[in-house]
Length: 491
Image (cartoon, rainbow, N blue to C red; front, side, top):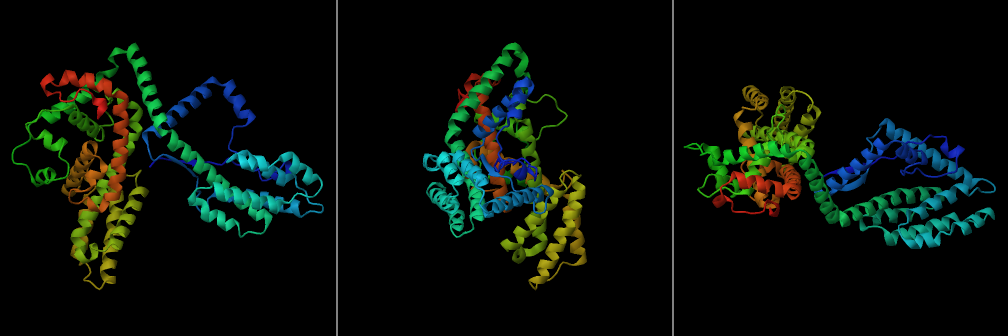
């Protein structure tokens, strides 16, 4: 899934003393708005960012906003916590003064009112009346906090019920207000995510029409804009038309017995090619694209960064599955039949691959092989099974290190099977493709489901935008008798 973290802007610790008390706000300041007016380029960049965000929401049905969680002990986290502690301590001092100073509390109540989660809160928090009560020293902060808490109980999503219930047990008014603001920030994100989900169909349609119109404007000015796209689809059609080599190896036999019955089997059968098959092959070729090849399809340039991310994820899954497959042959059925052991091995391998992702794969596999061998040796020992001999340990480490070579037989087979799975996803959908995974992939089923869903979402959105152009190109590539589908956009 795609997540957008909420980044709370920093605030000087002395602000609570030097200015009226008010929680931090992520809204644009007067200076920010002036800056946008004074700098048209910034305004254009903002519009482009909004357009990209709209496209991302339309493409990713799991898009949602969530609060930024800082790593424990991080500098930013410590600074934020210090500022928040100072703010709420300052509020406590003002309320405990004689006579109490309610100005800070009034600012907080005003902030709650401006959340506008429901009109009832806005009507109940009459700021003029509350200000008069504060001036006469009769403002009942605990009573107001309890009222707000009751309203939150009615308005919050079920997932926030427990958090709100915990607040009901807090008697200290400052701690209660602090807790209310923390839960309110989560409720605001719940509302944002609900709105995003409600508007997603409209945003998706807008994104499709906007991208197509923008591309058509460019095409009108530059008629050769589809040259690379045409060559990309021509190559895919040529690959599917090429006869398969006689005497297929064991992996080819395994591929034909997989759950996917459309692209691969259609290519090896006498049935004519279809636009669906050609496009599926074309999209798969993008995951193998040479970075030095500048003839990237024009219709996919805006998705190139996403495709590169998917390619990196695919490569990591290929290594992970290869490591697990090699490890299983040395672990024995008893040890590898333990879900806890397999999960631990996956976590260790994924963590090391992530740590070394910016370095050569040889270095990553060197560390992975040693750690995996150690985990297997220790787990066999803990279960009272025969530990690996020194020869077997050396062989295991050597085979795992060899996975770094793309020509490695285990890695090659796993890579082919993952590509076959993705091809099935394009034709049959992710869920149907998961029902009968090729051998060696069952241990990474969850990771494959995530990869497949991202790939399908990206390609589906691309087809919706550029389907009419693909249809015209494919009409020129495939003989009329072979064009079984007239509209690529209906895929």
